[in-house]
Length: 389
Image (cartoon, rainbow, N blue to C red):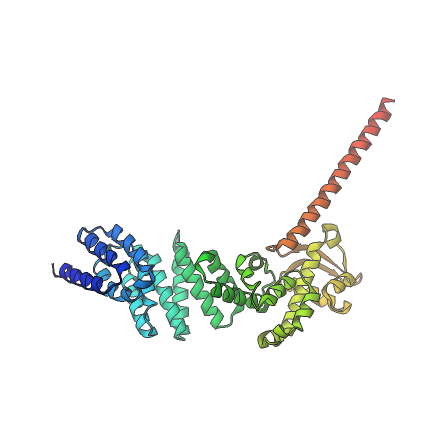
């Protein structure tokens, strides 16, 4: 067949121009292609694409070789190959056109919806880089609907979806949406696959979004994630400390950091100081309630909460009403007695300091139960003794 001859000619020509470590791959390509061993051929191709020296060969390899048997290939592996190849194309328009060939080819193939999503999201990434926000968002919305209907989704597809979604919301400065999608991306990928520079950037962006995100009052999931440790030895270590201060309602640390040169060099944070202060007050209120026993929560004085949250006593009622309206706590306010009764606090992902607080509560509860049991046993023994007499 003419196609077979054309493939052989291309593989032999490419082999001659390839560096020594790649030549054996072209021999394997030709052999496995001739024998129609598509699965084995895919495995060899997967090894080839991971080699740095293979970069300049990826696009022509697809055009002259892979495209001839792509329908017989695992479609997810094919999209991953094409995605890697598209990243070697410097011109965004050409790169997008290269990827869109797969998007269009897979669009109506019901058995490969997951591969279609992966191709669409990688194309959406290029749209985002090219400032085509509308096109990127359309791809995100379409892919989200498809993924919701799939019973099982490969982690590589989830990682692509959440990565591009997070990047879109970051570009739009939509902090809560970025925060949630960025965390979901991290749950779908291994940190070993992320460079040190990218770890620092992602930890930095997540930290800012946690602080500035409206409705984000629990940073525990981020604080417990190892990616945050990438800030420890970086110039942004103060940002990590600020997150911990917010999560524990630490007003002193916030006041200290907010006056530091690093903080004052951040116009975004400086201009949001009023929002941050109110957010810290609410988180201090949650922490104050969280630290107390069920009995203490039944009657919290305004003066106590004012001390914990650093607000004036006459402002406590407004602060509690704000927390109630946001669903951070449930309870009631007694204006006459100037007390608050809290029956529920928003569930939280706890960092180690807060887990220690729970452990101390459990230890105290255990000791209290033990004392009551001993007391009942002692009183019971005395009663039996009196009856015996």
